[in-house]
Structure formats: C-alpha cells, structure tokens
Amino acid sequence: MHSWKRNQAAITAAAFVGFTGFTLVMPFLPLYFQELGLTDVGDIALWTGVTLGVSPAIAALTAPLWGRVGDRFGSKLLVQRSLVSFILVMIAMAYVTKPWHLFALRAIQGFFAGYGPLTLSMAALSAPRDKVASAIGTVQTAQRMGPTLGPVIGGMLAPAVGLRSTFFVAAAFYGAALVLLTTQYREPPRVRTASERRTSTPFSTILGFENFALVMLLLFGLQLVDRSFGPILPLYLGEIGYVPSEVPLMAGILFSLLAFTAALGNQLSGRVLKRRSPRVVIGSSALVGASGLALFTVSTGVGWLAAALALVGLGIGTSVTTAFAAGNAVIPKDVHATAFGFLTGASLIGIAVSPVLSGLVAALSIRAVFAGGAVVLILLAITVRRVMVDRAPLVGGATPAVEES
Image (cartoon, rainbow, N blue to C red; front, side, top):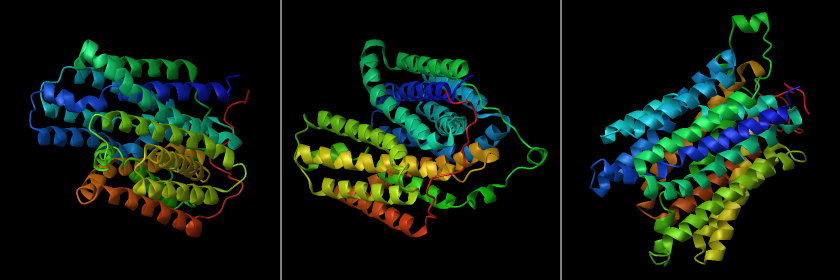
C-alpha cells in the first residue's frame, strides 16, 4: 500500500527543489534589469520591487479560488499545472528584451501560482491526524531551506553561463519537481457525499470557522515581521559600524541563520503541540521572537546579533507552523484546499506588504523597524492568549487518508 510517508517525502522533495529553482534567479533581478538597459539606480530598484511584489500579490488574491478548484478535482493536478506554468515562464524570462516583459511574466506566474499553499494542504491531508503539524512543518522547512541554497547556486552559475542561461537552469529545477511529484505522490481517495457534490461551502462560511479569521491575522502579522529584514539588514549593519567590505558576508551569515532557525522552529512545532495547545505555543513562541527583536535592536556585537536573530527565527518558525496546524484543525475535508488558500493568501499579503512598509519606516529610523516588529509580535501574543479558543489536544482537519507504513 502506498504510504503517507512516501507522499510526505515526495511533497517535501518537490517543495525543496522548486523553491531552490525560484531563488536561483530572483535575487539577481537588479542585475538582469541592468542587462535590459536600465542604468538609473532608482529605476532599477523600482522595477525590481514591483516585479518581485506583483506575483505574491496576485497569488494572494487567487489562492482561495484555485483552492476551490483543488477541492473539486484534486490538489495534485493543480500543483502539476502550477509547475508546468513556472517552467514555461522561466524559459520565457530568458528571452525578454524590455523591463515590462519581466513584470508581465511575473504577473502571469502569480496567477498560476499556488504551488506553496497546495503542497501544505497535500501534506496535511495525507498525514495521520497526530502527524499533521509535523507534516506541515517538514514541508515548510523544505520551502525555507531551498532559498538558502538557491542564491549560492545562482551566484556560481550566473558568472559561468550568464544570467539568461540561469533561467533555463531554474526551469530545469521546476521540471525535476514536476517529475518527483508526478511519479511519487499518490492523491488520497476523495469520497464525497451526494449533498457535497451538489453544494459547496460558501467562502463566508469558511471565514466563520472557529479560530480561522484569527489564524489568518496571525499569518499576516508573522510574515509582516519575518520579511521585514530583507530590504534593511545590510543598511543596518553599516549604520552600527561595520565597514562596507564586511557587510555582505555578515548579512549573508545572519540571513542564513534566520532561515535555519526558522526551519528548526517549523520542526519544533509538531513536538510541542503534543504537550501544549496551539494557543499556548503561539503565544509563547511569539514572545520569544519579540524578545529576540528587542535584543537585536540594542545589540552591535556579531555574537549578540546572531543570538538575537536565532530567537527571532525560532519564535516565528514555531508560530507559523502552529498557526497552520490550528487552522487545519477546524477545516472540513471537502474545502481543505480552499481554506488553505485563504490561510496562504493572508501569509502572501504579509510577504508583499512587508518590504514596502519596512522601507518606509526605515526611511525614518532603521531601528524602528525592529522595534515595531517586536511590538507586532507582542500584540499577536496577547491577542492569541485572549481570543483563541483553546483546543487541547489538537484535533480535526486532516484524518488518515492513506495507510501508514
């Protein structure tokens, strides 16, 4: 019998390979815009910002709609559709001649996105109920660790083969993810009653599920804080006294540390949820992240900066996975992908808004970005402790859909 563990391995591998492929090229878009003829730094920054931001913005709006399709026809088919579109878009990006061509292709990519949220939904549906948080955390870990490797590979490839050819390599990574998912993942059987086939749960009903709107707010706020470092961390290191030659290496180490500890937090969530309710886990881990940001705001030594970011990554990583698990616990199987579309839509909005907001705040004070992030996490912790309905043990959402090996 095809085991849930084999499904889990297929989803995790496909997520890692696909997210690695994406970050092979996206960090180097400013250089690509220079190749396309832009010379003004402001123009390059503007085109890079809107091109990177348009895809998650459109994906956030369309995620619930694609989720609805996934609930009717299966998530595997939608993920295959998404990967095929990514392959074609990456190949097309290698042939663009104008900046707006890249923007348009990223917009198309956003419309056909859904790869990330659907893999989370597939992992949750395939796993036995007591393994759901661990399954979600494992896929999130793959989604985080892929981007730590992608820029390194891209940084070596670009000088060797050129930026345009790097897009072909990224397309090949998506092709590998497509093959892995197609050959190794088996869709759990979908049994729907006659009434379920005649009707579908309205979107407004999904938003009314217990704790669901709160979980959406949590995911938005957590991503708002998590993605605030990207535009300003190198600038902050220069501001507190590090010489320009030291900044790139220092920033790279700190970014990698943040990603690694967040991945540890993704894994930690499944373990602590065996003993504590989501309300307690999210409230506590958000406060851990807030304490890390407070420490980061007053630190200058590399050791303290690293320790502070380790706390931030651990706190946010644990909170995000626990929030998804809490949302999963109240989702009926017939609208599972749709509901996950709402959850990931909220997360994507946070990802899209965060760099813009942090840039605006940093124009006044870079430290205010970190202090503001700490305040957001404290407010989220207080809100969870006061509003979230306690569910201990964590139940609902995903039931064993395939036989456990």
